[in-house]
Image (cartoon, rainbow, N blue to C red; front, top):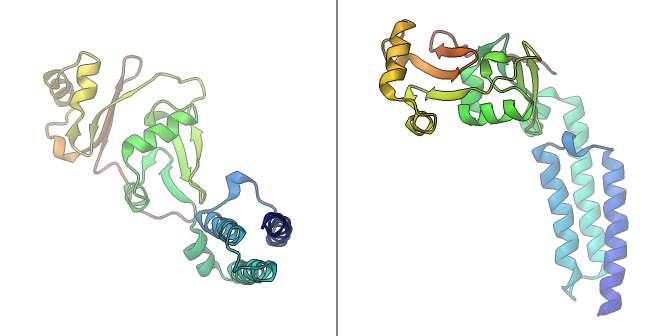
Length: 222
């Protein structure tokens, strides 16, 4: 039993390396959800075969070979057909273009504005006001271009899709009355039309209304 497991491990490792080499080199940042799925299945084939005495080395090799051939065939189709490529691997989504929030793409990718803020902060952008271009890549990370590399003022989100973030206000010793008063002074009398409101001591208020967003899909690849 011990030697059988050893042989399966060695054979499986060689088979997996051969399949990965055949499918091409990719860094971790380039792996799409489709790539992750077929990689997990390859590992699962090896894992399931290790401790099952009914599965011999030939069965293991056959499983890896068939799965590898299927993925190789799919990859070739993807390279030649843009529609299949977008369906299987997705395409970059422009979340902010020239400072304009793309609400359609944000909703389509199931992203909340707080998540967008978090991804921006991870790229050293601490205010959506300073985000010029934000692109959600196929693998889930974002590419971000800022208006100013010098602006590092930390903003807080006070209104999200028409809803006041009361916990945020309390944390910073601010009140709803203060917020509503300032929004009225800026000409915003109703919350229902507000998509996003942030505030910082350095830059003041940044307000996005329903009229300020776009719902246009921009294709930048393929």
